[in-house]
Length: 92
Image (tube, rainbow, N blue to C red; front, side, top):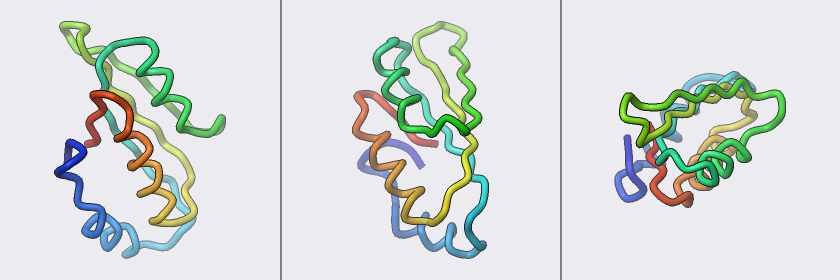
């Protein structure tokens, strides 16, 4: 799943609701390597989230992985919707 227009939230919600909550969920995003965009993406996660960043070989993009305890499928989907508002952000 990637890109704002290609993200199928209904399908994702069905998959997420197959397992009980709360649980740890791993978010994965790619964003252009601009400090302000990376900071906006990082700000979406709570202090207790485990966030990791890795630059692409060219340095043009940064991937962000974040593990966080989520309480519902809707909370996960809301996080994706907020992230996809960030310029150039791609959800994986």
